[in-house]
Image (tube, rainbow, N blue to C red; front, top):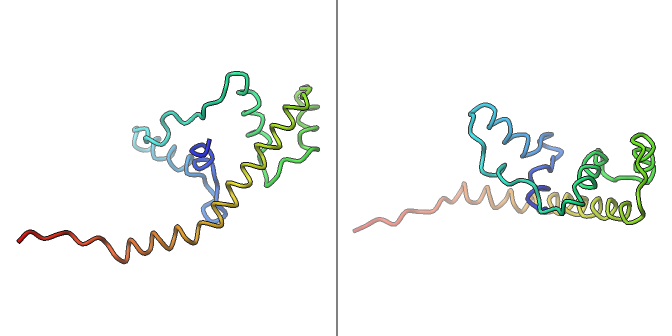
Length: 126
């Protein structure tokens, strides 16, 4: 699931997900990037609908109870309590992932800049 979240994460800076960027590369080159192969997380068949509903609802920072209720009324779906609980847990995990990405971003950028500034020296044969 983390791979899926990483590819679908949209930072405030970029305004486009890595997945969307890779899909553009695929469209331009005709070659599917490895990161897009086997993208679907291991979800039991019974969970596919709930997975898709989650992504339909995930338009902002949090999925609210009123959004779930509106979705339910609009599509004529009656959610079981475990389904609502699962959606809210997925939402919390997604938000945790985003927070971790934001917190770790300065460290990742510093590491990347350090690698650029100090490229590995090749060993010279004597």
